[in-house]
Image (cartoon, helix red, strand yellow):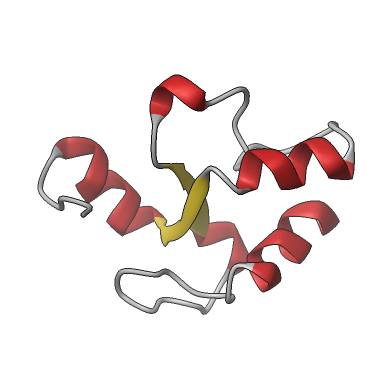
Length: 79
């Protein structure tokens, strides 16, 4: 939980698409290229080292769960 909170703060603390920022648990790290994804950053019990977590986060953008679902369904396109 502390690692995710720290990452969220490093990524600006809000969804890059809509600006949502009320609850950290409603924010996800969306991998820009699925082929480069080594592990998920939005799961409970993240047990990787901070360096590993930080490197994985560099492959992502911070979005809220609503925007994440719209991206996954194809409703929202990323440039």
